[in-house]
Length: 125
Image (cartoon, rainbow, N blue to C red; front, top):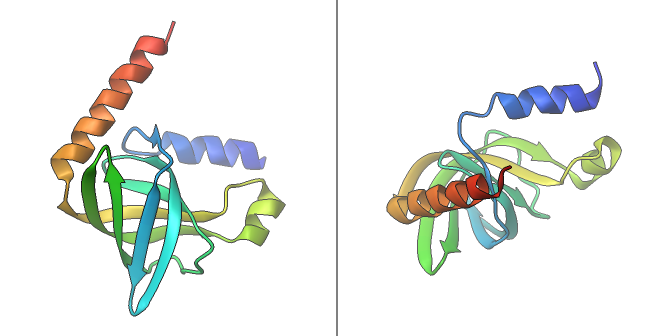
C-alpha cells in the first residue's frame, strides 16, 4: 500500500476537525522543557513541530495562546516523527498529541475552532 493511501486513511479516522494553526507552544514533561510551534489543532489534540526528542506515550503539559487567551492542556504523545523519519517519509517532523485534560481555556479553544470552521465553510464553492 502506498504511503499516501495510508496517510489518507489515517486522516479519515480523525474524530475532530483540525484547523491549521501556527502559534508557539511550551512543552513540559518530567523535569524537561521545550518549545515548539503548532501546525494544526482540534478539540482533542494538536500537532507540534519541535526539535525536542519526546517518545510516543509520554505525558506532557502544554501552554499556548489563542487570540490572547491562555490554553493549558495535558496530553499524551500519540505520534513522534523524528527529523530523519520525516525526510525519509515526506512527513512533517514533530509530535501528534492527544489532549487528556484541558486545564484552562476550553471555552476559548472551542470558540476559536468553531469560528475557523465557519470561516472555512464560507470559502467552499
